[in-house]
Length: 69
Image (cartoon, rainbow, N blue to C red; front, side, top):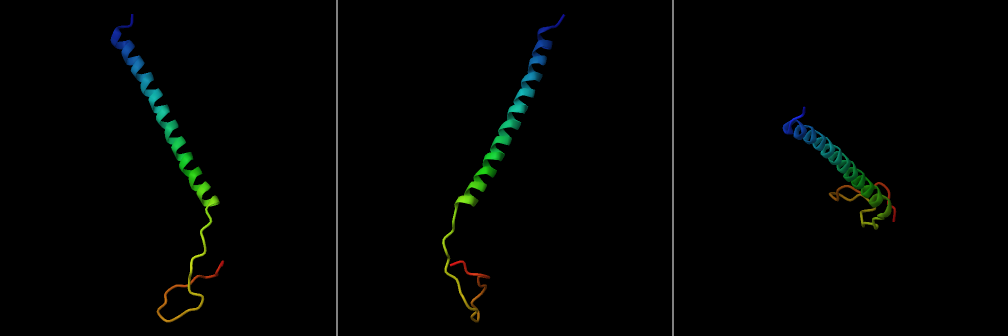
């Protein structure tokens, strides 16, 4: 015969297992959303042309390898 404490222990174990799977599911959804958002932003954003030096000058610093403008 099961006692009340046995029944409570059995329910608590199942509840913990369900909460674990829910937490895993939520983590996967957040991960997929974040990665999808990054891909969306990378594909849809189009940075405008940024002014840069076309020729090397003394002390000017790094230049663009190839101008896209």
